[in-house]
Image (cartoon, rainbow, N blue to C red; front, side, top):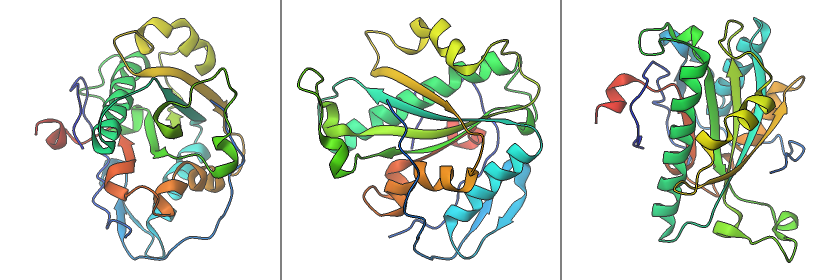
Length: 228
């Protein structure tokens, strides 16, 4: 997965084994059980051999336990033409662009900042379940409903002076532009059940509807990835 911008770098390694604008309630806690190891922020190994998803849930829970703020993001995109791989790549690029803008508003010097001072964005491209395919007649069903769900974790010390909803509203012109594909951003605070929230945002990958490599996104990225 490649980024369209290289404004920041940091380290959350994502070398896990690949398993073969409204927020819905997290569901279906059952999961497959491949083995694996996830390397977290700062290089700390999170040993969760029972399932790769548990490592990410642990990362989210650990941050919230030490005072980070958590939000669930839903990003909807305008119509993107082309084969599915092209559509997904452009969506991933747009999420990367969003993070590269956000991180500079959270920390003054993100290139040199310790990773525990940078926001974490963990999520995946997501497909609607059948009951959510029903779209109002006056609302186009772009990209067959494909969108992005993510968990955004903000460190206790941040340059942001307002809530995240107000922030995205104020910065609307940066994130949502005619020349770009992001159409709208929905924000919801996470105040409980971080494990279920993590399961929810990654459910399409967990269920195998989108592959791990195609769907999963984790930021900040390692500098080595940005230089390819």
